[in-house]
Length: 130
Image (cartoon, rainbow, N blue to C red; front, side, top):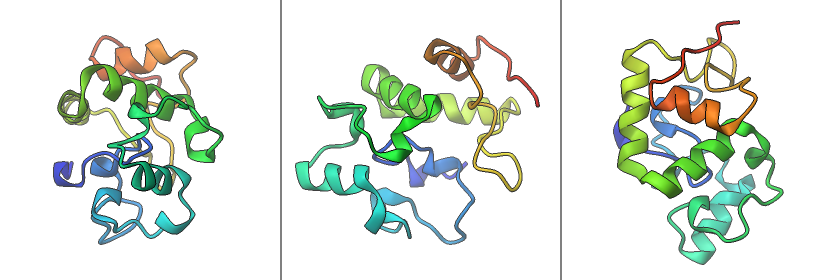
């Protein structure tokens, strides 16, 4: 985990993403997708820390349509960024996978309810291995 990369404005875990080599995370303005990212542009224009501060969440931005992303955003809104990062780090140490090799999905995906994602974050649920 690269904690310094933090969380994206949209709730994606930049700190666990290895998709783009050399990416410093969207909070550093370094995401190669930032020009097409609606949550990035919105947060910047409204000076929001992230979608968790937006009264219009979830909007129709494609990245916000997944259950995982919505659950992460609401978790940060309720418990804060530091707790989110701590839970992701603890999960990673326990073997929870954010992205399966070659995919953009992992153990936090495929859940049926937001509560299931939160339970996995809190260590109260085991991942459903494919």
